[in-house]
Image (tube, rainbow over all chains, first blue to last red; front, side, top):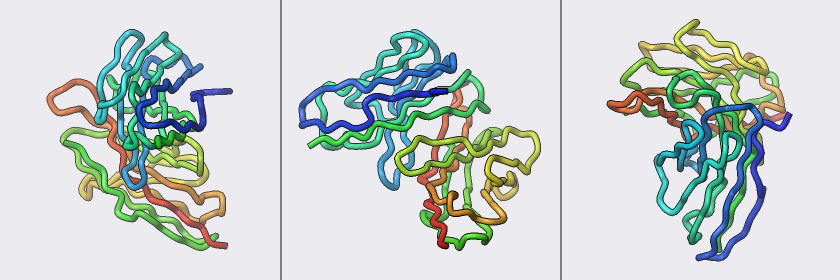
Length: 116
Length: 117
């Protein structure tokens, strides 16, 4: 009963390094999302994918890229990491997503990323 | 534009006493509203949702919330707190983006609930 799986769980990077955060869901959901969570800020949407083959910017997309590899997988890439990107990153999925108001999202357990 | 305000950043209660976590929202349309809970080092888990049916919504673990349109509120309550309720709680509104057909989620900044023995 995996739901949404994120890897890695923890990562430390140096400024300027790159890395990709992986996310996979096994619920056959159409829509997937990447958020970052910072203390006192709630969750802010970085990018989302309404359906396989489409991606769109969210509230805070600068410094990130995404790939919707297939229906199950949605990755987030930091090309040149900066200390301001130190955060906890959450992947989420939902069945129909942004076209309907009442669809809850299912979240992974997060990736805790520190950039020195 | 929609917004969510969680009126308390931290609420502390004693085990066995009632819980009240307050949430106010603003929205241009007819929103859906959610409460999520986040335990330490975990992702967010859905507690309950309001989607224009009954205004009193029952969720998991004995929580419920009442949608009050006149007060633009969606407060979360539980009659008797348990130690396992200690977590952070997020109020979320889902509403149409301005001028668009897509729905957007807006998260409150969270309320940390502490339960004292």
